[in-house]
Amino acid sequence: MAREERPLTEPRIAAARRRTTVAMEVRNHLRDSIVAGRMLPGHPLSENEVAARLGLSRTPVREAFIKLEEEGLIAIYPQYGSFVAPIRVADIYDGQFVRESLECAALAKLVEILQPADATALEAAVATQRRHLMGEPDPFFEADEHFHAALMQMAGHERAWSVVETAKRQHDRVRRLTVHDPLKRRAVFKEHSEIVDGILRRDPAAALDAMRRHLRGVFVSVEAVMQRHPEFFALTAESAAALPKRPAKPRRAVA
Amino acid sequence: MAREERPLTEPRIAAARRRTTVAMEVRNHLRDSIVAGRMLPGHPLSENEVAARLGLSRTPVREAFIKLEEEGLIAIYPQYGSFVAPIRVADIYDGQFVRESLECAALAKLVEILQPADATALEAAVATQRRHLMGEPDPFFEADEHFHAALMQMAGHERAWSVVETAKRQHDRVRRLTVHDPLKRRAVFKEHSEIVDGILRRDPAAALDAMRRHLRGVFVSVEAVMQRHPEFFALTAESAAALPKRPAKPRRAVA
DNA sequence: CCTACAACACTTGCATGCAAGACAAAAGGG
DNA sequence: CCCTTTTGTCTTGCATGCAAGTGTTGTAGG
Image 1 (cartoon, rainbow over the protein chains, first blue to last red):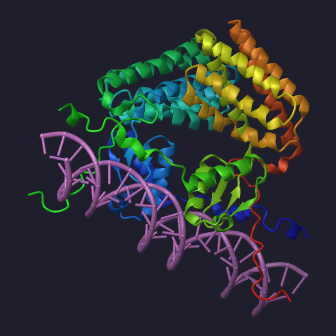
Image 2: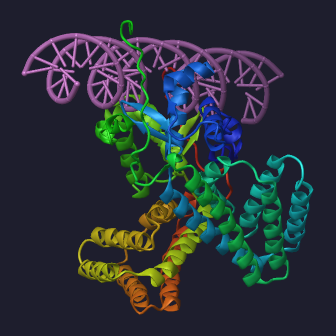
Image 3: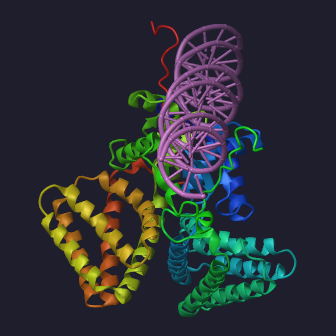
């Protein structure tokens, strides 16, 4: 009887856990290539070509394209072609607005509800970053990312981090267009320290000020790149930028 | 010479304008059905079934499913089935956080940069809502939506509205699960009026206070529904909710 | 009666094929 | 020499078929 009511309490979901699908791998691979700057804005992409290169069918590649288009990383023109999306200036500015609004709001909340365990975790995070001030830059920026995500999670809005992630994605693209300045790390680290200081001292004004300076500091370097490489950016919505592909192999001989 | 530099100033994009694709239509159709509450959380969905019902192939339906999964409206379990997604409590709370943070930040900015033309537009928007206090509810809520979007646009962050849209989507689902209370419209209208009042008087504190009360007012009705219909909600991340489909037609005869 | 095992009917993931559309290049007319 | 027309090749959108995997059902065994 009770058996009939709940034949399997929860095991029915047993193997329903989402295993990593090929389309998802392609998506992550392409996203990494685009955000890391290995494929520049305007670069032509073809479902056929990518599928052939990866030894796959068009289907999973196509699904990855569709998802990446929603992320604003690829532009698909129906019967013409797909291209690495240009970076829209409006996305940069609005992304900054979203990020600053959310991270500052979370920070203000965190100062009020901070738990002792989280306090020690924050200090540990700062220590980790200090260890990576020298050496390879990637581990430091990974810790940077993790630090901001942790702040959001400690504020009790873990799922809001994905919103910040998409908002800052175009910023990341811009950042990767520049060469890495070793001094940058020290500046970022100093600002992070000040944020944590403000939190631990329960001083919301100081923490918020530090956070705002931090985020805007990141933003000015973005603006610098925009001036140096205007070719990668689009001002209007449906960009007028770059789809000059199709060299189109000559039909006969050029002769 | 100048011709060679820009062979076709922009016309190359001529017909590349995205025409509405079938997959997109399916997506909008299904999203409307889910958000409007015509398909309740846990309802089983099958690519085959939907495709057959709409007289289409599986491909466009599948693409719509994938997009809707990203929106958090559908849950896909790889070799088992797809279902209308349960409403995650965390999404409700975090969505509220995102919405309140962004709309309040935009409002604060708008008070400072308000243009005369926008001021008259805001008054017109309020007047429109007043006209729809009676009669069908849909036109009013459409004006409601448009009002909030206009605030974001006037603040100079038009593209940030889409972020709010996704954040509030789960709220909309919950709202549609309730019967419409005629008094609700008057309360919403009053709060909108107070927001506009605060803006026009250049009183950020008053405007922000009204906005916060407004958004939280929407939120309490959400919490009421959660208590009345707990079966549609999921507390944990990878829900334990409802995938008991598969009556599975008996192999022979039941005899 | 309860439990363990095997077949089944269904699902989604991926591969493949065809058709409509769009631009680029070459050919034809002024 | 410049402009219009035709041809060609590529693209994405959609249809279809096969394979792998899952929970359920029915049956056999204790």
